[in-house]
Length: 417
Ligand code: EPZ
Image: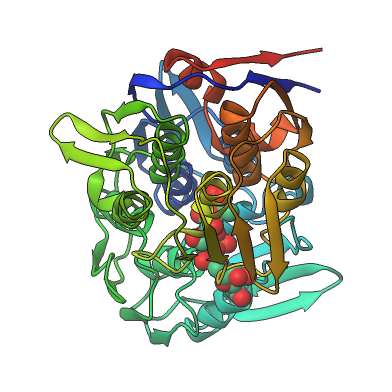
């Protein structure tokens, strides 16, 4: 099992480019099943989760080939409509092909994975929406089967602005008969990127980025080419690293609008933030201030940045309160940070952080990809050596993370057995 070894204390300085967004790439790859045409995708990152999605597409009959750094997907024939259980177990986001299969073939079958490290992750909102679109849903023996003669347009009100449910319903509605309106839709930038891709294929879809998305069903879609947006969570991770190490980091391909809530919190904590055509830049001051954070659906502070900001606040001056409103169990990183000297106390869905002057290196274990990133960040400032185990989680969502940190001056390397 690989480990990432960090010796803390170096200031990070310089310029880095983040990879394409994992959480835009996955739904866009699923959407390739909606068309017989050829989809050419640029900027798709080389990640474990992307590899799993490519295996899902191939298992359903799509032809998937890398041409240099470009990905070409062609689902001329869809020969199966069951998502392989082994792949669903590896990555729950495999469920993003359900909507595309329902729209293209009128049916899907999916193994229902259990919970994961951050929560129970139910799919009730997805299924309620499919049902509203005319699908009969059966759940038995640990599988979900959806069937619809023809998906028909309808007005759907989501109980919660679920990212995955919004994306699944957008895809199913693209080939429906009639007009679909999704209300209380998620507004994340990845939703807008999916809409832009679907439009390139000829879909008639408007409103992504707002709470109301309107889709006029079409008979079929064509070919298209698309470049995925930069990863805003990777951007946030590097911004935190720059502040944490009192460094000076420029993320040259960052989209400022996508990270506004993160920049606002870093500024509140005392960091110097600037942005322009050269990208988004952050400089860390000598004394970080404690701040309170509450995770919310976009454009609020992202849950995927909660572990990373907890690491930052663990060495701030004063007491911070971080509240996680999206997932019910996303504090696995707390125990590991405690072992590095952080003084934190869990109170229900909040964590109280009493800032300490320094952390000390330790052997720590990543439980999910963002917790793993938070532990790498802690290693960057801890005294001595930190070994982060469970890099398999980190590799799900970060492409060449240690290389990028090394490029900024960190003393970091991957140890492979
Ligand atoms: C997406 O997950 C992201 N994954 C997650 O990123 C991210 O944390 C999450 O959105 C929130 O922003 C991908 O895009 C592949 P949700 P998703 O549906 O779609 C509950 C990462 O680190 N819910 O918005 O699964 C759910 O349990 C990953 O890259 C229901 O109750 O998130 C959670 O509490 C982790 N019923 C909340 O809603 C449903 O049917 C938000 O879930 C669906 C969701």
